[in-house]
Image (tube, rainbow, N blue to C red; front, side, top):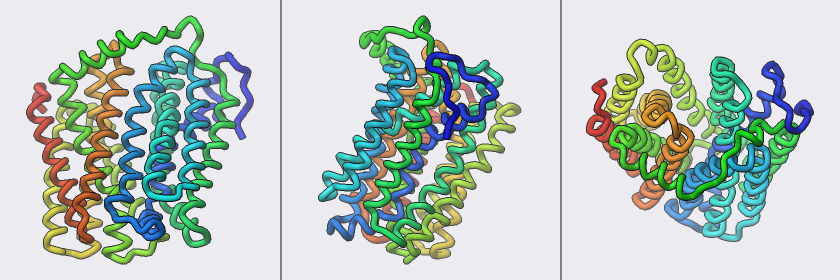
Length: 402
């Protein structure tokens, strides 16, 4: 499927197979998260589990995906890119098999954590390989193509999962995910190593700890990282709660859930596109502030709709469309602002911000499950609370006025 390249050679900047392989690596997150969302209610039924218990599997994945980013980034700077990403994909495949054979919800959550530890190697190291292989302008072009794939994958994955449930059970979804891992592994095996031996750094735990301590004591960095983590955590609350809200409460068929999910991804793509144009005129800080404040406004509106029942399914879906669109503005500007605060340790800044986002997602998803009462209110309440917290943190900590 992918062009065979000599090990250790530099990739051809015009080779579409190299870029295609990297794009596949970028999709591990949405493929692993979103494909099984239509099956959450089925899993609850099979294991006789509550919504709270089923959502352990999502929270465990978010936690593993966040922790793993720091580990794989450091290992790849030491060992090169190919070996860590191949090990990560293998670990992901083991996690897929474990999930498919899980005898109960607790084992499923454990294997989802393992799956996430491996899955996060793909996107983290794909970005690093782009940075290794291309000059700044070409790298920006390649990353744009990869982000387009990242936008498409969350629309396709739940649709695939829903269609699988028509013909097979939820366990088959994890076998399909494992097959995706095999395809990705074959693609990586055909790639060259992009980080030359002379450019690698020895792994020093002390230096890593010092870098992260510097980040965690920076008011400006925390302003970007924590405000974006809160609002992206709200998105994970939506991911955790929406299958139960749509499928159980509003009686949407599982195979149709992906269409409602995909509409919101379109909102994020639209806002991302607008942000890429407006940020050059108004600046990162101002666009970040607008995104955070509007997220809080739409979060409050969502809670009001959920509590009153106004508009039914359409009212919830329309408000979520507006809220989730703002993630396209907050995520991009938050990461850019965080890395620009410490450009000489941008990799560490990116990894820590990513970890905080997924840790926030794990907590938000757990909160939705703990508060579950069979209505949309718990999901809406968590989204509202975290989005307000995100806006407050941005206003309080980011000093450069928007």
